[in-house]
Length: 119
Length: 119
DNA sequence: AATATATATTCTCATATGGGAATATGTCAA
DNA sequence: TTGACATATTCCCATATGAGAATATATATT
Image 1: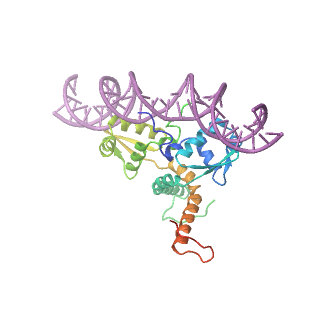
Image 2: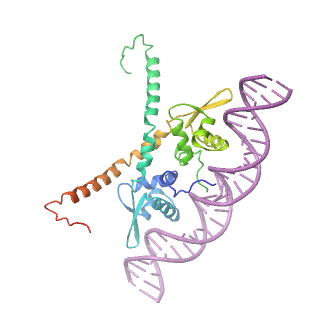
Image 3: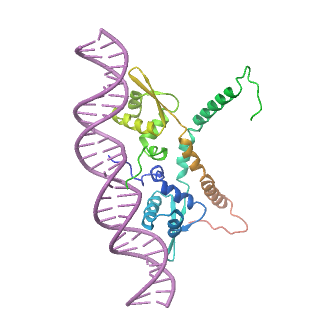
């Protein structure tokens, strides 16, 4: 079995750097494909293909206006991704604490845990 | 050019459902490969392969204890993913607000704008 | 209609899977 | 050493890219 399709879900769609860049670029306001091509320096067919993938997963909306097709990011599907990673937050927080503690301990080989000024 | 390697970064590694399940399973405590195989009902070689991918990206740590190899999740790399999606939070929040507003408006039709019921 | 501009699609190709089966490697126990 | 158990690796294969080039489609303008 090959890898899951990029259009199977947001996780797969977002695995590609180019698509992540596009989503950021289209987050604030809708833009025609040409703007993406110029701003992200990619070939036009490449942009269209990535947009199609994003569109299939519902990560972008399209609106035709004359010759131009304006795309805009639809962040909703990213919520699942955010919530999934959110679950692990406490773990990396713990790790940060451990690192902090170690730094503290090294800074002041504390007897009781006296606070000392930060450099 | 083919798709980026699954070991190129956390985004790609996490695109696979199986690997996400493994990360969740190994989040709280380290477990030997056998446990993963039983709990997630996957073949042993498959588990080992996924673990290798996760290991290369730094999403899991391994510790050999006799015949067993205990793996545990290292959430740190997921932080980037979390922060990236975090950026879009305000957008889906807005959308939620819009949806809320619409529900509100429908619940108590505003005096100013004459809402008409939907068929 | 003819032309120009903006996008989308198609084709080819090198590459990376992920699963299944078989096999190799590592380690403990007798 | 031999045998058993736990993991890792290798081979084979069907499938899905993503980039580049060429081409098709859509729409506005003249």
